[in-house]
Image 1 (cartoon, helix red, strand yellow):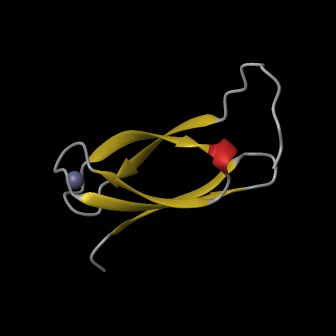
Image 2: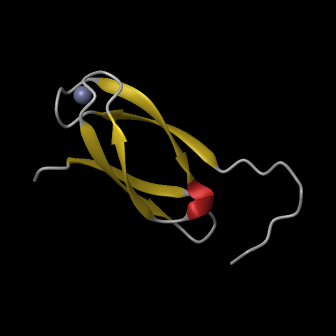
Length: 72
Ligand SMILES: [Zn+2]
């Protein structure tokens, strides 16, 4: 656990992804300070639950962002 002082440290990365259900592109914001993670976010176009798999390196840089259907 790394404590960050009260400085504004932005580790939010805006990325464009394609929905695995409807194929529409949309922008999503990834919080790289959390590290590698998996989460579900609804598609803003078709409202289907998309599973995001995020890989972040030790310095908080976004390496990969994969989207897949929750029902695979
Ligand atoms: Zn969609």
